Length: 74
Image (tube, rainbow, N blue to C red):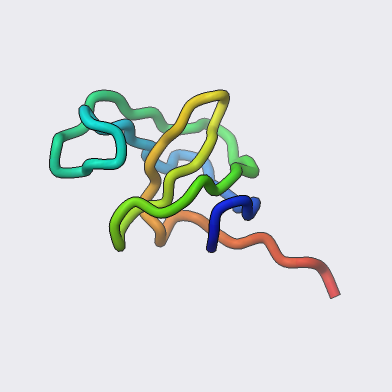
């Protein structure tokens, strides 16, 4: 996925904010687990492991394997 894509975020997926933005090695300063599945906007990549997304007005990191690309129905 790339910047500007819409993605599907399953419920109870851990979203992270790092102590230093875009630096997973700085440690986690905040996390949340959405209670309902939702669509999110992909803002880019953070390392090989995370995507940066927009969720409820904030920027969050989510492990790539938890985010699903939206596809057009055929």
